[in-house]
Image 1 (cartoon, rainbow, N blue to C red):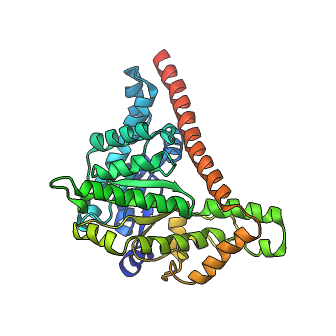
Image 2: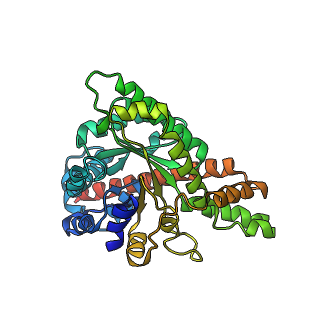
Image 3: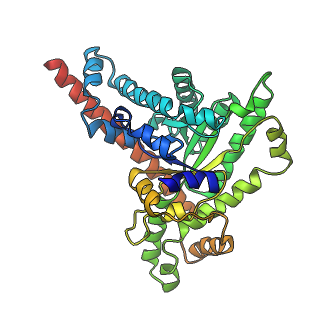
Length: 369
């Protein structure tokens, strides 16, 4: 795990864990990961579906909850919030030792709100008020409807993880929501901008999966030569956009008030194609002021044989050429981003609905004796 410590201390990238289940907390595994260099944690509805349906760790709590005969969605949130609060406790020392730089735990709003700005605002506000921990980030998807909710939460001084970003254009809109939200919050008497943290979660491997599929369909040699290059190229271009956005007079005015940058967070960093190196999406996107949230297998692989080198702003000309080349051979990159966003929202909604259905059936069985 020495690589994880070096990743942060030498290269400025924070490794977070992209998983949470109760057994990690009760066994002490999460505490051990934090000690080995993991500096935060992300969760989503699919992670909780696998955790709750995949083990008996939640049975005792659910049996007690089901006896109260409440809506099953309330039982779901009771189980989720217990795990989130336990993880917040584990990472609280990281939060305090880094003066709020890391140690964050993210929980996502109900995925059914992805296209409901007002509902998202209400849900995000409620999660922050219910949990009330400084190292909590609430995840809001970067849909068109999510953008005003993101801005509003930042304007209220709440820390947000913006998720499901698949395009440079949407990433620019996300950073604008953060900046304009900070500017509004700065006008509030006594506002402490240094307490507002945010990450912009740019999804990586899913981009390659979809682009590669389209390149294969095109079939021309110049198209096939670009397979496996799109996701990293877009990530590197996103980092260039990040550097340009968080510099200059507008940002310097906010920074003078204590504001901190909204870090790019590389998500979906396990390789889906077995032909690609298993640490590809970690190795190629290492650089300062970034986060990489890693599923268990990718975390273990990187700790074992990852390549430690600053790569996120290397070979940018090649990244620009690859990204342009993908469009030139006929891949509609706007359509790719739109499809991936729809699939991402749908996937989380499906996990949420399936879990609630399973919990409802289980609750009825328990009450029937």
